[in-house]
Amino acid sequence: MLSLKVYLRFLWKNKVLTLINIGGLSIGIASCLFITLFVTDELSFDLHEKNLNRIYRVVTKIVSEGSVDEIAITASALADHVEQNYPEVEKVVRFSVMGNDVNVKRGDAFYKEKRIIKADADVFDVFSYEITNPSSALQHPYQVVLTESSAEKYFGTGDPLGQWLTIFGKEHMVSGVMKDPPPNSDLWFTMLTSMDSTNRPDDWFDFDYRVYVLFRENTITSAGVIPAFEKKINEIIEDKVNRYLRENKHVLVFSLQVQPLKGLHFQEPLMYDTPKGNKSYVYIFSCVAILILFIGCLNYINFSILQSIERGKEVGIHKVIGARFSQLVVRYLTESFFLTALSVVLAIVIAIILMPVFNGVVERHFTINDLFSVRSVLVIVTILVVVGLIAGSYPSFYTSSIKPVLALKGNIASPRGQWIRKISVAA
Image (cartoon, rainbow, N blue to C red; front, side, top):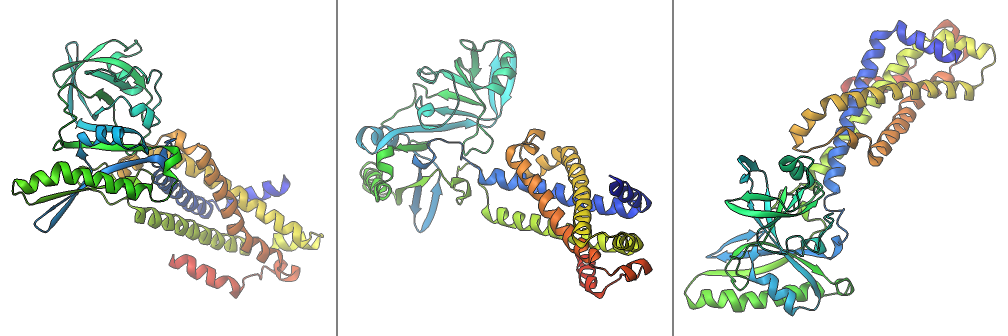
């Protein structure tokens, strides 16, 4: 305790240098926390799906006179055909985006809803959306399932089930309420509506649907299942679409491909696709985070070397009265962890204050709770341990190895520290 008081007095005596060191390290750690939030969020896309390894989406390639277009949608009729005729498939679900600014009316109040999607009733069997009544939701035309946030928006604390909303001029009955889909999901929405009666499942030219296929668990592990499935759906497209186009002298040629949901977030974006990430950014930002920590450690070491010059006589006195090398190392490492812990606390405060700004830059919705999630706490603890050890090791071992006579004279400057100071200044 006495040693800590002595150290605190020393820090207060050199408060400008101390503030610069703690401030720089705190900003670096806060930057690392922000980068960690972004990187882990990118890498966690769709990992919440219990059927992640069995879900694939069907996309379309269109070749026309040498040009190639790839779109993230396909024919509505494909869904029914696949589910009825291919035994390796368990479920097929279609999505159709109504728009990002849909007119919604409740009573005399009008709203603009961000994203409403039409979906088949089997959506809750394929995807891991949490809803209390999946068997009855979206079973009939003009039904709507609200997310918890949209239910609160339109009905407050009241029960929305059985209530009515006018969507695109048509009355829809609320048939269910589900938890908001996580933001790190390939499909994000505020409402799901049922497929209406105008949908024609036999229309092979109605290319306006995102189609997702859930393969049976006992077949998806078999080698060659996906290529064989892709070959079969291309045969039906050849028969139903391309043959008609050739007979009518069209130069378009359609083909289908399947993509696994796992890793879909980092696939090359197609036309009419959901927002996609860039794995290069993940690698770049990860390297930046490591570089920031590295620079922070160098600056801390430089600060500690300057400290050792100021505290030379103190080191000498400790050695004269019998302090062992290991005791001094532990002491200076403890001081390093103490200063790093202060920096971590300040970094968390900085991150909380700047969270809205960061969300605006990266277009995310991180909250304070994300800073205290299990993975974030693990990162914070790792930063504390790594920075405390790396930043404190060189100064503690170097200072503790100084000869008592030189320490008492204050003659402890060493050329061995010059390269660290030069790198620190350059960084």
